[in-house]
Amino acid sequence: MKKLVEVIAKSLVEHPDEVVVTETENEKSIVVELRVAPSDMGKVIGKQGRIAKAIRSVVKAAASKEEKKVIVEIMQ
Image (cartoon, rainbow, N blue to C red; front, top):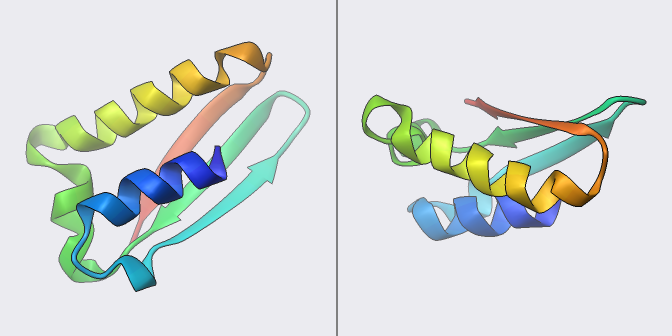
C-alpha cells in the first residue's frame, strides 16, 4: 500500500521529493500516512476532498485481498 500511495501522490504534486509515506500495521488495520509540502496540500486533497477520496478508494480496492482495514491519512 505504501508504494501505491507514494506513486499516486508524486504524480499529483509539484514537489515530489517532499512526499513521505509511512505505513503502520496493526492486527486489524494498516495506517498509511501521507505527508506532502504545504503548498501541495490542495492538490492532494482536491476540491471538496475528491482527490483524497479517490486515493482512499483506490487503496481500499487494492487492499481487498488482505483482510485488514486500510486507513489513509493525509498530513501536512
